[in-house]
Length: 149
Image (tube, rainbow, N blue to C red):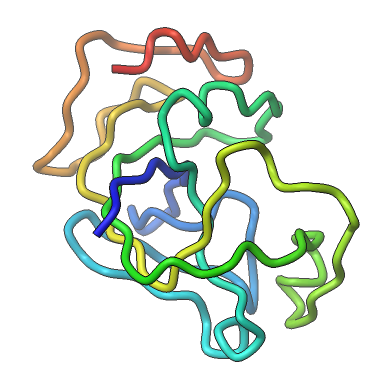
């Protein structure tokens, strides 16, 4: 089992969900529970992605359109990193490689289990028993990753 770091958005129901995926590629996660990619993605050897270190996640420079959280996760069954695909075709049930590389430090697994939330872009305390943070954060778009604990 490996420790990885993953970014999620929080659904209206309070679930952690894939940051950019919707529709047929959406995966729901719960603290302390294992999640897997949709069956059609597994059949195409496409797994769940995360970052292998917090440092590599900090170096991921993208402006995110919504509030998100970062969780420390356990991961099992490493998979070869497949070609990156646009999120819209994935959400519609298709893989459409874009020919660009994944961000440095991206890894792919068959199973990921969020263990604890370590940072939230909105500073909102979500109702998870394993929540831990040293400060309140209210930054929405531009984030100083040096503050992640």
